[in-house]
Amino acid sequence: MNLLRLQPLIFAGPLAFLATGCFPESWTPALSVQNGSDVPDLRAVYLPTSQTVAQAWQLAPTDSWAPYQKLTLVSALDTGATIGSLPDVRALDVVNTASAAGERVGARLPARTAWIVDLRGAASVAFGSSLSTRATSPASCVLTFNNWPADDEMVPAEETLSSLITFRPAPPLAQSTHSAPIFLLDAWRLAYRTDQVPDDTMDNRYMLTSADLPDAAALRAQGIDNVMYVVESLDDSAVEEDDLHEIFLAYQAAGISISMVDLAWLTGQDETGGPIDVVDERYTVEPRVTLVTDFNFYRRAHGGFGGIHGVPSGHGWGGGYSFGHGGG
Image (cartoon, rainbow, N blue to C red; front, side):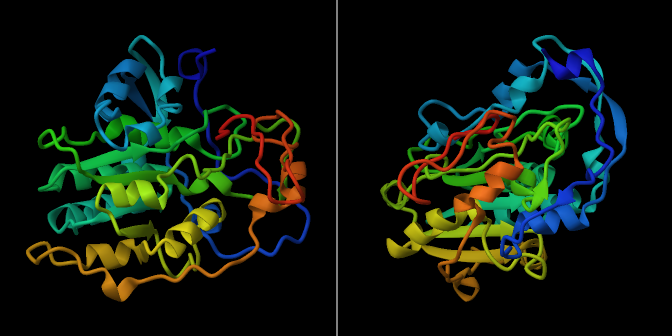
């Protein structure tokens, strides 16, 4: 069933969930976005076909980062153009700020650097679009959005979908075996983590796994030795998101440096200067407990994202996971 064709998309703001459990939360981008996000109004829009949007965002098969891209959310669009309602993402301050930050980054793109942009999905898309448009060297926007919109959804997937329609990346500057990867993440993906999901709510959250991002060897093979991790505000996000924790620890152990920056820092960069200097923004990943190995998290989510039961497998807490919507 195509949701955009058969029924209006409605997002009336965060749902009221019954908080349970006492998982020790760290202040991550998901907590920041769930506690401080405006709800954009719906607007009537021309909805292009899924093929049209996919062609705009899909990486070429020869692109080194193509294996990591997901077009799951794009496939929610119809195979025929139509008129529908989607959130007016241009009315969101964070989207406009992210777009401005992307322009600054594109103008001063540092060498040997991968970008992991962990903003509200609509803002991540705006950031990647502006960066690629302004970039003077090859840059590849890599979509990681791996969920589906629904009427009674837990997180607003249609915001990100609206942004994918509203913004478009620039075509590649030239054929190149090396490009700067810009991984676009949705900070909503692990929101409401301590809350019990009502039976009538579609849990469209998801986790990223080690298969969704390149490992240190893959980064090194492309000449990359630094990762820039972008959040909305360092005042609200103290550590990386829980599903990135083990990935970042592995980067750090392999000698890949990580810099954690926010939109205010990026928009303050002088466009006329040289490449952005990331040395002063180095971030050290400290081992911590995350919800990835929290059995109660999966129980509160009915065992899996979307209703299919999945619990930690393997020995103790260290095994893999099985997910419904948004699985790895």
